[in-house]
Length: 432
Image 1 (cartoon, rainbow, N blue to C red):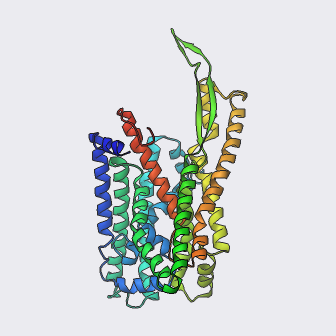
Image 2 (image 1 turned 120 degrees about the horizontal axis):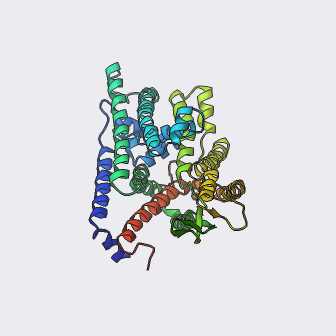
Image 3 (image 1 turned 90 degrees about the vertical axis):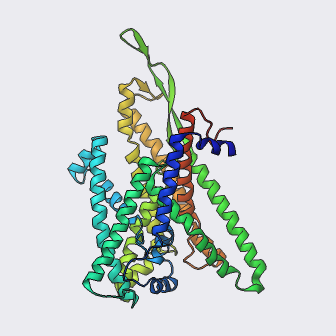
């Protein structure tokens, strides 16, 4: 393993990409401590300590930038929301978007450009709402309540989100892995020391229950290890569909005749459905919290909390399952895959080419996706059980959601590095 890690720095291009990614992450962490002008972060931290669970996950994803109310306080969440909306609009909702989605690389560039513009609009709207809402529920949060002060705060937060969006795209192009996922990964990792401190204060303040606290910590560590192992097992699971290609003569050469397979992952969508579900589920209570005290706002805050047994958890599970199916079939189109196999002379043994192949692939994908979706939903609600069993405060964001994202991003990044090493005749991490 150590030798394989050393091989990374023997490849100049790979070394440059990794160093570039690390440099971008350092910039991300530095920006998490640069405060927004004319704001009082201490007042916000006091409010966060009293209001558990509402903004905890946003703060976890941003690596503490939210409680510091830094220029990166809103993180990359507006970009994720914009991506969700744009992908939904490509499902024949807007003809132009559906046409762009089928135009290959040119169409993807147009959709990416629209997503950037839409991100700026969403970030500007959310930043105005955040500035006004926090000043309402936390008197003294904004030191100067003039229009220009609100404008400066909103523009600063919007610029921070736009900069993070640019950083994510730069990591994707010039670094290692998916830039947006890497930023979320870094935010979660950076929040681990703070979460550990909260767990320590909650469990070890009472010396009379020291033995019980040690048992709780051991149970939490064992639970996290089991969840990590389950995540790796499911994220690596693949169903191989055998494919046989017929022999055909083109000119004086013979093509085909070989056997291969189509690797269908049990969880083809990865951690994207969890991030999408969280983005949509957290939006209503976040907005409603700015009008806390109103009956409708209080009902939304109480019932949309996925960290409690009730409507919020049910919606969370339904959204995860729905987004898992949606994202899987966006990535893998059975009809298009069956047409490509038919054109190239390929067929699945025992299945007729064409419509029958498409039906068979759809049936297999439905079963695999159901298993993957149920696994994602089960792992994502594990924090509730951890918190209840260990009697921890609700602000502790441990368990499935964060672990699933961390493990998924780590596996994808490791595969990217391994493919680069194998391409240059070095052994990867998974090879002996």
